[in-house]
Image 1 (tube, helix red, strand yellow):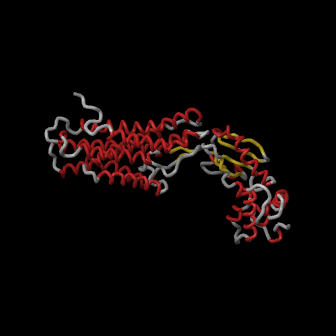
Image 2 (cartoon, one colour):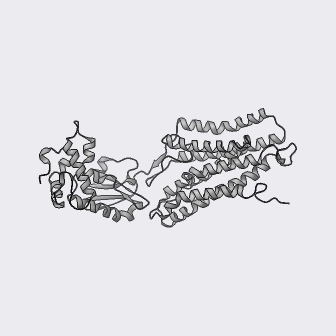
Image 3 (cartoon, one colour):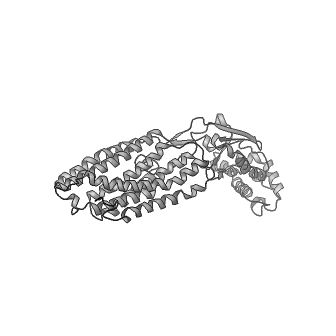
Length: 420
């Protein structure tokens, strides 16, 4: 008679972790479903970034499953058991990986659909595959740990181990990017994960999965055949050597994290006496960018002397050439619909100039007035405090126009203070 899928532990042993994976991934991607301008480069990255909690759940649940199923008193690990090693591990892992990786992929499906409907760019399939392979590796590794140490204490230790791996990935600023499934930073428009990184990570996760499966099969067969514990521990060492060696080599000389788009296509437009340039994929948002800058310049009241161009950050991911773009300022055009002016207002106020400073410390009045200008630009109506208190909006704008170059170079003196 054919056994039920979840025999002998029952469906909860697999369905509860699968449901937890589904929930945490949906929760992690839910805000992105409402983004008006999703990008495929960012969506593709979520296939491994959502491993954050899902991977730990899969690995820990697989460890618990193996602890319960692969104890020495189970029929299929007894001497002369008819199903030695491979058939047992194959049944268990096909069930676990199928459900856990399936739940993970299913939870990412809504994000894929919304990006396909209104996103820009093209999907990075190798990156997406690497995330699913990482989930399979986490499941197989957890199962192998539970088989090596079939005691309930192995379950929390496995959870702690997965969490430590994630912390290491965030704490080392990309040095662990080859071994930690979750990257400490995500690529943006104008970037992509480097080919070398994606290939190595996929290869490493595949080796981890295959080594873990091979180890579990060998141990189950060894227990059924009465192999000594010394030989079983020798098998553990043998299966660990390759993935550990690959990880160690990659940590000594990690590949480049992101590759940047060289000379990306752009669209430029002249408006507000400035030149606006955006990445070709952000071309539909040119009007939004101009509308975002217009109120700031209207409040400022003059054509800026600090810069004459505003560039989309996606155009300069590989660095900015001053001889090519001249006096440009960079803004972030984000997929969630927000345009971050990146301190353009602070630059207009002269705060950056005073922070960079000349050789000598800037005059205190210069820094103070720059801060007052910054507050003026961020507010509406006439200022009621600081150096411009009691002045009308037009008077403040006139003062800025007369002293604009000194503000831009942090060169204001007592003689330049507003007179009311």
